[in-house]
Length: 291
Image (cartoon, rainbow, N blue to C red):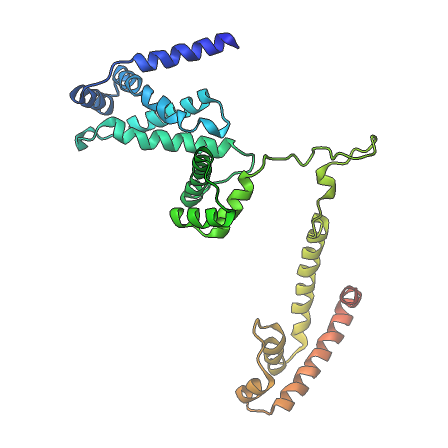
């Protein structure tokens, strides 16, 4: 462990002692890397900016993740910046690379801070880091603020709803808990886990599959039975019983040029014909419908 600590200290010392690059030299190295893929130029460009990576990583050291991991992710962001940098824009590389370094470190924190993925959108990511930063600043100053007022302030600053802030705050208020963690009980022989007390009201997978198969079977039965109806009976049944928005008796009567009472009579006769056809063709349909 002490050997690894020594290696890290030497790495940080080397990064801090790397010479700064003048603007013209930085530009030339960036051009060599972009146009000729000169590995030596890339190494010099990256080495000269590792102190920037370390400085940015240090800002996120309070998130409970190892500092070497943050520096490593920041280095990935630095290399990504080098791959995308356009020297002809006359912008200092450090200015351009800062965004990529910070983004890489933040993504690493969001992926590893909790086993539950969070901050999947830019607004949620901003919410995650602003909430923690504001809490840390208030704790340093000793200022106290009610949760509601804190949520309102952060919601306004980040541009999200107060509900989103409250949800994120609840997620950050405690560590992850395993569903397989044992529950303390007065009985020493108890082996209950948190998962044992989870209730799912959804049907079991075999019930879902069974319902799907039964539903498809009933659809086939109905399509077969519809063949016993004449054209007018079929139109009425479809409009009254099979359409997503059922047509009223009065509207259907006007469409067909008959009274609504006549529509009702034809509908009842058609349903009776369907019932008889189902019983004759598929006797099991009756017991299935009854169950």
